[in-house]
Amino acid sequence: MKTRITEILGTEAPIIQGGMAWVAEWNLAAAVSEAGGLGIIGAASAPPEIVREQIRKVKELTDKPFGVNIMMLNPNAPEVAQIVIEEKVPVVTTGAGSPAKFMADWKAAGVKVIPVVASVAMAVMMERGGADAIVAEGCEAGGHIGSTTTMSLVPQVVDAVKIPVIAAGGIADGRGMAAAFMLGAEGIQMGTRFVAAEESIVHENFKKKLCKASDIDSVVTGATTGHPIRVLRNKMTKEYLKLEQEGAPFEELEKLTLGSLRKAVMEGDIENGSLMSGQIAGMIKEVKTCKEIITSIVADAEKLMKI
Ligand code: TUI
Image 1 (cartoon, rainbow, N blue to C red):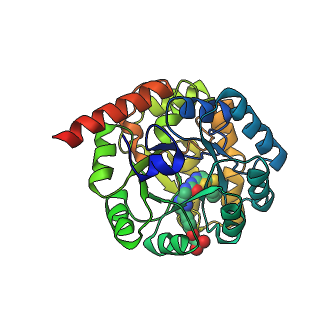
Image 2 (tube, rainbow, N blue to C red):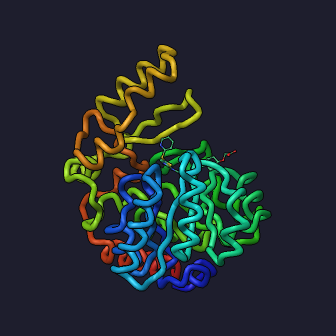
């Protein structure tokens, strides 16, 4: 399947993996790239030198292109932005803010820049700043989200920019990919589907919970703090949403979520952890390898698009 996205990325498939904090480490990134997609290391809030190590591990495991996701709320973002250049990482994706201040340096170094955005205004700003492509992420996605659905956001972003658009949020199979292409996207990004990949280091408890989740099992915490986060419902979200409704101060809410993603991903604490996941979790029933995921999605989408 060839689109402007496969041309820019140098991949076989126009599929990129979400830059998920704790989850998107070298094992998963290398497996996605080896399977023909674009594997991504999620720098999240890792110390910069750890990100450098992760990059080197991916390079040892695959000769194929890969990327690093830089989360703009991370105070270490400037150092990671520099490491990406030093290590000649082919692609950068960004999230949770504007990467405008790093764009000129990345472009000068030949790094392909693909900001993840949740609005048309931010997409237009990123195109003006020199972005090579855009990920338009709808609020069906897991983790930090905007407020517009993928169905509404993608065609509006496609109409507003000339650079190619990658759709994200609520996509986990060939039907979702074909639908995204019908909206004008030329690629897809998936996060939740890869959480339940065989190569993902996510704790078994989290993977099992994800495979058992239904369509209505995710909730959004933090709507009142300015950082809305979609996660699977559990003991933590019940307490969090109750406190939020009672108007608890930010500090008290933060106490509940501090270190909670690590708890979920690494320790498998599915009651107190933050199980970041998209609404499409209800469709994910089994753990599959990255190769199986990518091959079946591309084959199914191609079949549907030929009808
Ligand atoms: O970034 C994500 N998803 C994430 S980041 C993350 S780590 C985190 N943990 C705790 C609190 C906050 C973050 C978990 N999930 N997706 C991409 C994404 N970017 N979605 C929405 C946005 C976005 C939002 C605002 C992009 C740009 C933006 O700009 C606002 C502005 O004016 O700067």
